[in-house]
Image 1 (spheres, one colour):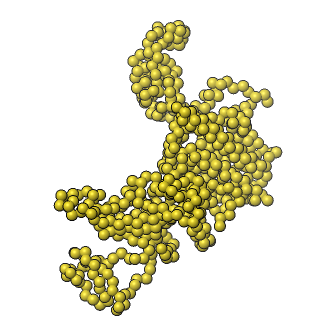
Image 2: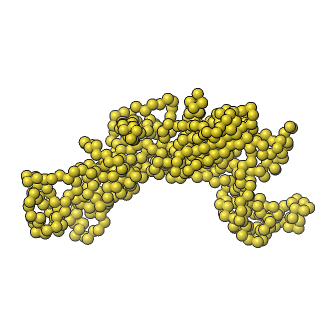
Length: 378
Length: 70
Length: 117
């Protein structure tokens, strides 16, 4: 069968998900073999290599925004799910309490410690391996070793400040002045090197430490003390949220706005206000446009018309669909294969590194499945 | 630092046997009023040595307790 | 010591297992994947559907409390389901490679251009 020729407009229209006042239309992707008779939608790696694009919008160490264009939703979603739940991340897992006479209960303090995001030398973090916990089937597990466990300790005691008596006379009530170590912060966590970790984690910059030193953990008064040892292991977000390396990772589809009939003058100004700044611009109707018969601009030369400038900033609030004067003049939609990703890291890994790791984990799942299939069919 | 293998199956507390002081050992308590440390032997009357108050609190155990940070 | 047959970046969740559910033949089969969910399921379904030799491909998760994923493939005469599944996995791995190289190149260009400013 001769391949049917499809116009570019038709191809573009297929890519738009319609966003209407009460409904969303044309949602599913239709580029599968057999959906359009005569067309070839077979998977072709070279085609994909040529059409797939990445565009960066923001590239800060722990916060980046980029677009993936030409990919299917199922793949983009797989990357997002892996970013949130399947990238191994280091966090405090076991807390050994030698003494805790503070007001904060042992288990509450342990829970808070688990949620503290940690950072350290990236090469060292990559070197650390998974610690397998002892189970019924495997009572030994991995065994606690330098290659799978990071030891930290927290030892703080609250005492009266040296000038406590004179502060008291002045009726000072700020506990941070009256006492030493009244407030226990994440910066009080100390890293304890074990074994081969000194090759990676020596020095102020490299050692395992909390990303945010000012996280308040507990408050104490004189006579109280906290003395505990922590073991940190690598885990995944699917197991516990503390192991998720991203504050969040999300994507949205690029919005489209098409103005089907002219919007002029004050209507155009109102139209522009329906969208965030910069999405809609106002331009003058040129003489050549006014001359075109049937364009709707006849007789309106010089007036301001609404023009779509930059849909990237649009939040698709559908505000313009609420006003009867714009009925039939505007169509909203989203581009089905343009994913604007936002990856906000908690600080252990860099955002772009996290995305690359997510892609490689998907690849590894496939490789592992292939091995399993080969063994099964043997 | 010794790490006792009191790992309970759930993320919880140590269940150890309570220590019976016996006639010779003294245990330290804290007075409810004056926060004075009070040493009492087995069979001693429960009374603070200083202020005479009869409510004494036991100190936190010296044993290590393990938790899962979850 | 942990066994590492090759460079592993992910956490092992237990032995990966595939099995074929009963009632299958060379051109119609249901596979059960252990320790998998929508992440691999939907992505793999998409890649396998892109194969014109595949008549049907769908996945389901029988119960959300169990980490099992069923994948049904039906092929036209001329391809076996095992070939279709393997091709799907290979294509998905190729896609990941393209994404990695394109992303890395674009990221380096962007970093260089913003760094130069």
